[in-house]
Image (cartoon, rainbow, N blue to C red; front, side, top):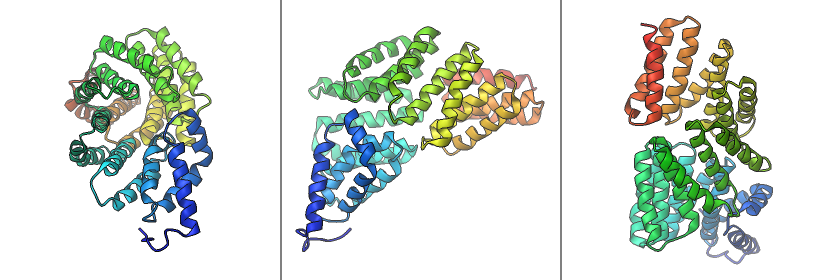
Length: 397
C-alpha cells in the first residue's frame, strides 16, 4: 500500500483515476464484445489495476473493476493474477460492507477455479455474516450459487442441489434476475444428473437453455447445451448428443475459451468411443491433448484429456502409449481434490497393467481405485466404476 493523501492531485494519479473510472463503466456489462476488448487490452488492464491498488485514492475503483472482470480472468486462465489483485484489495478494506463482501465472493470463485476448494469454502464462510448483515437478496443468491457450485465441483451434488433450490426460492421472492435463474438452473440440472435423475435434469437444463439463448454472453448457452449433450449420451440418445456437441464446437470455434473447447473435444471423443468409432475418437482426443499441452488450461482439464486418450489407446491395445497417458493423468489428479477422476484413471491403468500381465501392480492399482471410490458410492457414476473395477480385480484373485 502507498499513502497518497498529499499527492492525490498529481497528474499521474488524475490520469490513473480517469482510466480506472473508464474501465469501471466499460466492464459493467459482461458480454462477447467486452471479451474481445479485454483480450486486446488484458496486459494494460492488469497494469492499471496493479497501479490502482497501490494508492489510497484509487484502490476502491480498482477493486470494483477487478470484481467486474473476474469472469474474464476465469475463462482465460488468469485466475492466479486476479486472485493476487483481489487479496491486495481486501487488505485495503477497513470496514465490513458491500465491497468487502463482493471481494470475498470473487476470491472464493477464483479459488474454486484453481481447485483450491477448501480455501473457497472458508472464504464463502467468511463472507456469509457480511452478506447476512447487508440483507441484500442479490448477494445472498450469489453466495448460495457459489457455495452450490463449489460443492458440485467437489463431487457433492446432493448439497449443491439443495443450495440451488434455496437460492431459487430467493429469486422467486423478488430478486428475479434471469441471469441468476439460468445460472442456478444449470448447476441444479448438473447436480440432478450426477444423482441419476436424468429426466428431471433434462427438464431443468432445457429451461436454462431457453433463458440463455438470447444472452449477449454466449458461453453460458454453450455450456448448458454441452450439459444437455451429456445427458443425451448417458441416456444412449447418441444422435442427440452428437448434434449438441457439434453445435457447441461450431459456436466455440471463434472464441478464446480453450478450457471449454478441450471439454467439448473430450465429450465428443467419448461419444465416438461408445460407438467404437476409433479414428473419430482419436481425432477429438488428439485435439484435446494438443490444447492441454499448448494452452494455459486448467490442471483438471489437462487430466481429463490425458485420461481419455489413455483409455482410447487401451481399447485399441496400444498399451505402452496408454500407460504413458494414464500415468500423466494420475500425476495431475494426485494434486487435485477430485477422487472420482483419480479413481477412474487408476482403474483404467489397472486394465492396462492386467493386459501387460503385471498382475501384482494391477491388483494394487485396482485396490487404490476402489478405496478412492468407497466414500462416493451414493453416486451412480461411482457405483458404475466400482462394479467395473471390482469385477476386473476379481479376475486377478
